[in-house]
Amino acid sequence: AKRRLKRKREKQGSGSGGEPEGNNSNMESEAPEPTQADEFELETTISLKHKIKSFYFTYSRSGKLRVVLALASNSVEVYEVNHNSETAGVETLRIHTLDSQGHRGDVRSLSVSNDNSMILSCSYNGIKVWNANSGNCLRTCAGGYGLCSTFVVG
Image (cartoon, rainbow, N blue to C red):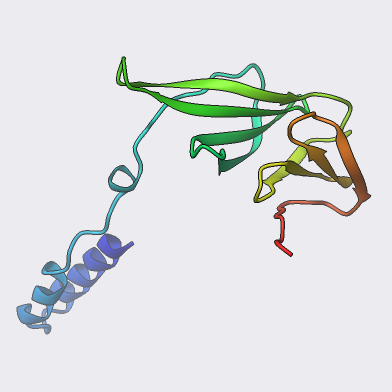
């Protein structure tokens, strides 16, 4: 966006001919804006049979990264990302799969409790709270068209 504004100002300055060149020196001295490659680094790729509808990042009690995925098959899968020091690579392990009878429609949102014991899922017709370890549905609540969800501490 900054680059686009800079080009627009340069075009306006050269078109009118009335602006001195000294005004553009401040814009050129600004540091470049960070790109996505500066902020993120690809760790691994998880291959699945179904499309991902929603995801959530969390950490296990031991500090390992976990990814919770809601799939188009209305199932929820939990993967753990492990750094392998021997091969200097990253491996993913499927920890849990929740594929029992759940939502009748697509799962739109996922959230994990602070202690990683419960998973909350939202669809167009309701909300379900799941036990993360056993995969049992603990509670079902009627609701509207759920697009986002979160657990509130308290």
